[in-house]
Length: 90
Image (cartoon, rainbow, N blue to C red; front, side):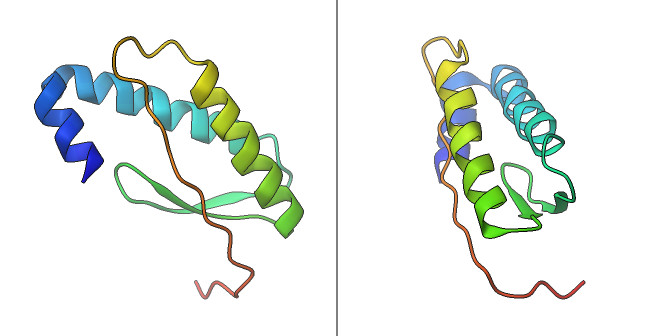
């Protein structure tokens, strides 16, 4: 897993700092979408619900841009996004 490798390469303190920034970018970004909510936080990822597939796609693209524009130093953080139109059962 990429997260485990980064933790080993950077050390726990540096990895935690990068992960906190990743999480902050995600959580700040999702607030811009009315009705969007985080359903589950997995430690280094999220499951989120949006009111439309279009909002989910727009958020995914905006989040990718935020990650790309962030100054990560020698270990830039990247993320994958998947969108599913299935129902989420709470």
